[in-house]
Length: 102
Image (cartoon, rainbow, N blue to C red; front, side, top):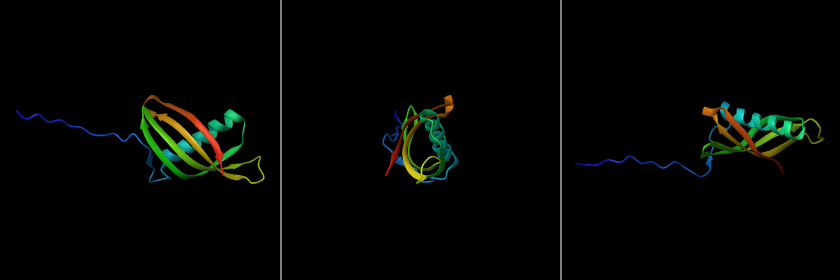
């Protein structure tokens, strides 16, 4: 009798996002801006995704560099590093971090 086993490896590290204009990725970026605006009473507006990576966890982590404009700043456009955790099958999503980068 021959036993067969099917095994596969789920990538656990960060994987580059190939399509930065994918509607799901853009939705995650807009979510991050909206949540940060609520958290710190800011007036940022999402512009685009500059770079992105995903990581499979109990759901999906998105680590993105996004471009956003700030209605309260003189130099209005800046980049931000954000991490969002998403579990769409349970309709759960959380902003983990949001920081301005140079």
